Length: 293
Image (cartoon, rainbow, N blue to C red; front, side, top):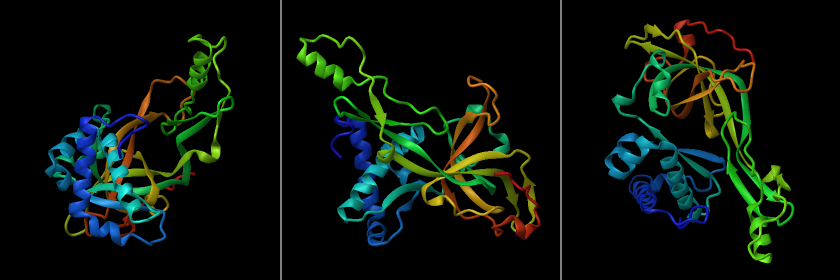
């Protein structure tokens, strides 16, 4: 990767890209090769949290701006798969976070937003799989210039307010003058947008002792969202350890657009097997409320 949206990577970006390349080469080269030829469209590549912590650059950047750091890592990862002529897309899934990341859902507050934390939970899927426009592609009907805008989940779709390419072309032909009216003849290229599969989950904290006895079942229910290869794979009552970034979302039943109240949403980054010797609530006769679609 030499450019990002036409801009040369700065020093810290180059260091992060290099650190990811070394991590994949030294720890996952054979695993990446084994994926070649498989038919699945998306694979999750599990990366140990301890490996990230061993690299000073990755440790700092991952814990201060995880989304940005993971985006760069995914670029490097898919560059390596492309070199193997593999059409599958790989996604980094960091697992086995250190103990200081472990937390209880019932203790979550707004002050924890943006933190990447680990929870042991009972999962209940909500409403089934759906999709969203993660990156919208627009095209100017006048000059044909295309632009991409990254979107935010469950927010109003963002679009260009005007075509700056048309403005530049007009200025070049008119000695730097601006067009009399802002060029706004821009359309959404529906088929060219980047879509992502997602699914919402209901989550409750759980704790089980070594003998399989329920020690604690959380009172609070939180909403989590999964993407890509996890979608459609989880069943009601399954018990997992999840690693999620704490985010905020609108109230589901808000009755006016500019409502300032918010709820906590867990953007689930990775899912691990149950840390207990029980993998489903049915093994313990725990009854979960049926969820409405």
